[in-house]
Image (tube, rainbow, N blue to C red; front, side):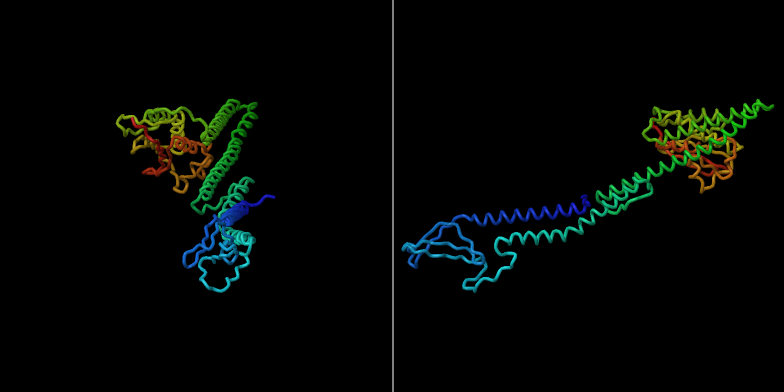
Amino acid sequence: MRFPIYLRIWLAVVVAVGVLTFAFGWLWRTNADQAPAREIFIRNENGDLLGQTRQRPVRVPGQGVEFQVVMTDGSTLVVQIPPRGRPQGAGPPARPWFWTRGPQGLLWTLAIVALAVAVSTYPIIRRLTKRLEDLRLGVERWGEGDLSVRVNEAGNDEVAFLARRFNHAAERVETLVKTHKSLLANASHELRSPLARIRMGLELMDGESTIGSRKEISRNIAELDQLIDEILLASRLDARESDIGTIEHVDLTGLVAEECARARAEMVEVNQGRAIVVDGVPRLLRRAIRNLLENARRYSDGPVTVEVVREGSHALVRVGDHGPGVPPAERERIFEPFYRLPGASERAGGVGLGLALVRSIATRHHGSVRCEDQPGGGAVFVISLPCHDM
């Protein structure tokens, strides 16, 4: 039979106290029965010795101790020493309580002590183990698939610390599972559109618009390739134990300048030719800048400006456009995988993973990304990365 932990702890305390009480009583009784021998002398008023003996005292319950002294005339005299605290000439001793009578007194004492310990320790032990039981039930429910379960974190002891760590781990696992489910659901949805267009293009290959169909098929295949590449990259970045590449000293100013030239964006000179160096993976940093530039081109017909500045211990890359901007309520959601602003899903290009990858790349480099208002209209995306001291 499996006993609850609180019952096992409680029984262990009761048994331990009982054993200690019994052992102490046995030792005390043994020492009392083996009292050392004592010298007893009987003299008259002139100091003459009338009798003497050397023996262990005999304990008489309720009467104290007795000695039998052999007198010089051959007779035997019984000498009695009453218990301490009893006045001389007092009447017969009071009748002892039933649990102190005879050899059974120790057993009664043991029973009373065990009962007192059991009654006093049960509420304390039950209160402690109740939280352990709640934690066990929470872990069982979580293991059965209820990822939303959380346990009580009240207290400052080891149980409360364990509960906090469990809640933190459960929240991370639930978030990861939801993210992966959302990723799979949205990826399957995004894959249907180019596949349908490819199938339609193949059906039109036998018609007069063969060249146009081939171009459409090539464009859709490129879109599929981009989608698969971004899904794989997002999965690798989400897996914190995966290797993202070799960390190097990266000239962020030069890297941004190359991407601006490629995307025909205007780079604002604010550092007077001085390089800003960060520690990171060049391929991933280039991908983050490129995604921001492509996003700005996609949602703006005007010029795209980029500037790289250093503020304190961080390097900032600001990519600004003159498009419709991002409402304040949507500035966090746009970094979620496959999320698009209302009315933007039909725009050419993009699969909804670009900004999510930018945030993942910035996070893996111990940085961050945010969206701000652009003076005069539009949006500014700011990547903040720890700057390497040169």
